Each structure stands twice: as C-alpha cells, then as structure tokens.
Length: 430
Ligand code: AMP
Ligand code: GLY
Image 1: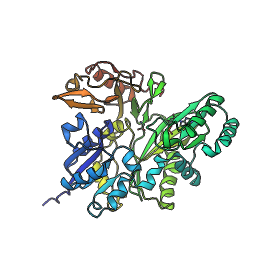
Image 2 (image 1 turned 180 degrees about the vertical axis):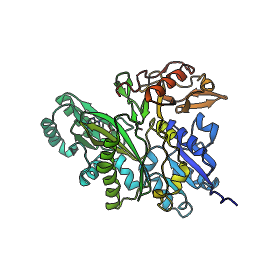
Image 3 (image 1 turned 180 degrees about the horizontal axis):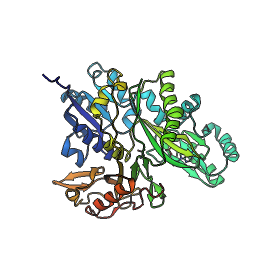
Image 4 (image 1 turned 30 degrees about the vertical axis):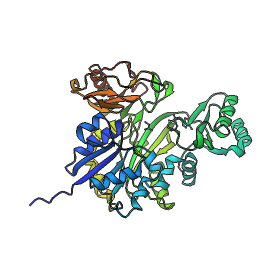
C-alpha cells in the first residue's frame, strides 16, 4: 500500500501578489488539505478561503488557527514578524505545535532595525557599505560625518517606514536638513529616532533569496525588481513595478561569491549569535565592480519577486516548509525550472501617490499565456475591482527573459481598468 501523505491545513498571512503566489503554489501540493488566506484578495478567494482578519491581530489569528485546525502559518509581510508572531505562537501552549514560516522576533530585527542589520553585517565580515548611526543627541556628529562623505548621501531611518525610510540626496545642505528632520522632527515617527548614514554604493542591484530551517539553507532563484514608478528607473519609489528571474548577470562565478561571502556567513552568524531563524531571508545586493555587497536584509520574500521566484520552483513547497519541524531541509533537493520568468505590475493611476479605488477590472479570464496574480484587487458585488495601488502582477515564462517579457506585455493587452498604468521597459537595463 502506498504510504499515506501527511496533509496539513495551511494559513497564509497577507493580501498582496506575493500571498496570492504563495497560495497558488501551496494549493498545488498534495500535502495541502485546506488552504486559508488572511485577509487575502480576489485572487486568493478563487483557490482558498479568505478570512477577514488583520495580519497583526494575533488574537484573531489564534482563534482562526484553533477553529480551522491550522497546522502551518506562512507569514507574507514583515510587520507580523517584527511584532513577534513567531514567538507569540511558540509561547502559547495551544499554538506551539503550529509551524510558523517566518523568523523569530529577534531575527526579524534584521529587517526591523537597519542599525541591528549593519552591526550584524560588520560583526560577521559580510561586505556592505561603511556606515555610522546617529540619534538626536549626536546630530552635530552626524553633520560632521556627512561632511566627510562624498555625495550622494544615503540616509536610512532605522525602523520600518513602509519602504519610504531611505533617502538618497545629492546636496550636502539638503542631506543635513533631512537628517535633522528625521532625528529631531520625527519625519518617520519612531522609525527615525536613529538614522543610519552610509556610503553610497554604485552598481546594479539584484536580490538573492534563501530559505533556512535555522541549520541548513537553500538558495532560491535570484530576481531583480524595478522599484521606481517611471521608465528608465525614474520618479518615486514604489513597492516594485516588475521583476525578472533569473538575473542574467548573476552567473555561476558571481553566485559562488554570493554564497561564500554572504549567504554562509549570514547563516553561520545567526547560529553564532544564538538567533534562531526559520523562514526566508531576502538579501538585497548590489554588484559593485564584480563583487556583491549587501544593501539590506528582509525577513520575508519580496513582492513582486515572489511572483517570478515561486513559479520557477518545481519542488513541493509544503514539503520544503515541513522540513523545518526537524531541521531536515538538507534532505530535500531543490528543482528549479530553467526557463526565465518575468512579471509586470499593473497599478492604479496616481500610485505611489494618491489614487482611486473600486475600478472594474476587465479581461483577466481572456489571459491564457500568463499567470495573473492579484494584489490590490478585491471582489465587490461579484465583480473584481481595484482596491490598492499595485493591482495585478502578470507573470510569464520564456526561454529568455526577453521572450517572457514579450508574453507578459501581450497578455496585458487583454486586461484593462480605468487609469491603469504599467512600466513598458521592465528588463531594460539587463
Ligand atoms: P533599502 O530600503 O535599504 O533597500 O534601500 C532602498 C533602496 O535605496 C535600495 O534598493 C537601493 O536602491 C538604495 N540604496 C540603499 N542603500 C544604498 C547604498 N548604500 N548605496 C546606494 N544605494 C542604496
Ligand atoms: N520588492 C521589494 C520588496 O519586496 O521589498
């Protein structure tokens, strides 16, 4: 008789394109019994049960987990991790059997505090930009440090600031003014009580994703996202307007450098410092000359990077996650599709500034050559309408990234909503 698979009820926390992609991938696993997403969106509604609770309402999450006999919680965004959802579960007798995919609170500081991340990087000799950090009481020293640096000046609010806390400024006087606004005038609230000032690194960015059970690790496909709203990487920063995987310039040699100089010291550093970590590590990198340097850590997957990384993963995701229970990730081999994947974000006109919601979205069922992951989209009166800035991510495969991008753009022709906008140059710099 064939061995019976252990099946699990799974809850995904979040409501973006990343979470729709997680749900899509988890739903394909024979090990996934019932799938829930909280709060979810119109895309997750098709493949899972959406639960109308906030990702930071731990008590409500606890009640749902008990009610639906959930065995595993996959945490999409950083907020619940930085607020300690992993520890909340492990400290509660009724919840501690539940497997949490996402790191413990101490580890989540790698994203929750830029200062903590910089200290970790320096301590473990991981290549990164030189830096110093300042508070209100050391404002004058901050000015002096800025005077010693070459422009542009990189100022980072220490804490979470919804992706807005990094300023890159060309002019010294302006940099000083901004530093004062961050430290003294609380420009980013508590998040900018401490400010990290660092050396500007000039190069091309990419991201490396690592899955770790705290003991072993697997390197997932690389990806590159496009953060600015305007073509040619101009205009305001967004959550991400598109992504490509793999990154063509991250060849074998370069990946070897990333693994030896960055991934291994990161995993070993966590162990050495007694910081348990079970989940994804998203390492933001910049290629300076031929060498990778770390720009930042995130303690979750990227969005829209997930929309190109997970579709290329052939291995059963539930099986990978399940191995965290006994730290046996090393016993599973990763299978990655050789094809390139790209995703293009369709956003609401006006985003990342103010935009209108509730616009009817047409044409999704007409798309057959691409995967359409829903982000800021929800169901109203049985129709799909926009409910956020980033609305849909259109992912395609190809033998090359050029071919994949072409397919996404062809699929996008079939989709429309009032004031829809997207970048037409994703991949332009590769
Ligand atoms: P972060 O939130 O740390 O990822 O920073 C946001 C963006 O600012 C990054 O994706 C980079 O484009 C840019 N950035 C951050 N730090 C530096 C740096 N030291 N040199 C150049 N660009 C940087
Ligand atoms: N796309 C960048 C991020 O998820 O932080």
